[in-house]
Image 1 (spheres, protein in one colour):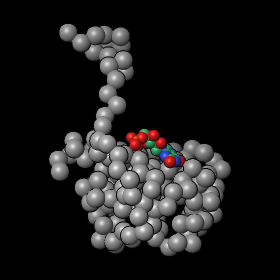
Image 2: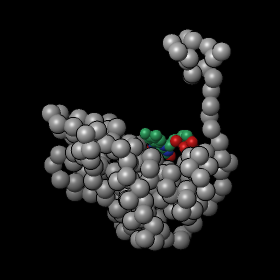
Image 3: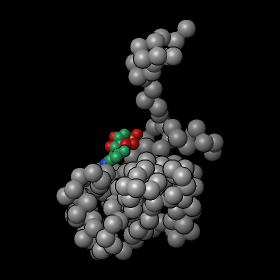
Image 4: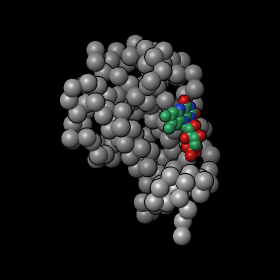
Length: 172
Ligand SMILES: Cc1cc2nc3c(=O)[nH]c(=O)nc-3n(C[C@H](O)[C@H](O)[C@H](O)COP(=O)(O)O)c2cc1C
C-alpha cells in the first residue's frame, strides 16, 4: 500500500472483532509513533499500551466518548515543559498519534483517536486509571483492533478552505 492510499483509507473505526492485536503489531505501531517529527527532536512523549480488559474497561469509563469495543489501546502522553522544546508537546504527540493511525492501516488494523487533552476532567480520569507520574499528561488514546466494519477511503477536500498566495486568493 502506498502512503497516500493509507492516508485516505484511515477512518475512525468504532466496531471491532474479538481478535486480539499481536504484540508485534503494537511494537510496530510504537515504532511508527516514535518516527514522528518533534520540535528540536525533544520527543516529549511516553506511551501506555493497554490490552488488559479491566484497565481498558476503566479507561472507557473515564472517557465516555471512547466506549468502543477495541481489544487494545495506546495512550499517547506528553511531558510538557514551558521552557524547553517540550513546549511543543501537543504538536509532537499529535504527530506521533497520527503516525499510529496511519501505520495501523498498513497492518490491517482499525483505530480511532479518542480525545483527552485539553479536557481537564478526561485527563484527570486517565491519570487516575493509568497511575501516570506527575508531569505526564495524556494527550489522547488510540483504540486499536481488527475492524468489524468497513469504511470507504476518502478525503474531505474542500476548495473553500484553500487560499492561493494570500488569504482569499484563487487558483489561477
Ligand atoms: C482530537 C480528536 C479527538 C477525537 N475524539 C473522539 C472521541 O472521543 N470519540 C470518537 O469516537 N471519535 C473521536 N475522534 C474521531 C473523529 O470523530 C473523527 O476523526 C472524525 O469524525 C472524522 O472521521 P474519520 O476519522 O473517519 O475521517 C477524535 C478525533 C480527533 C482528531
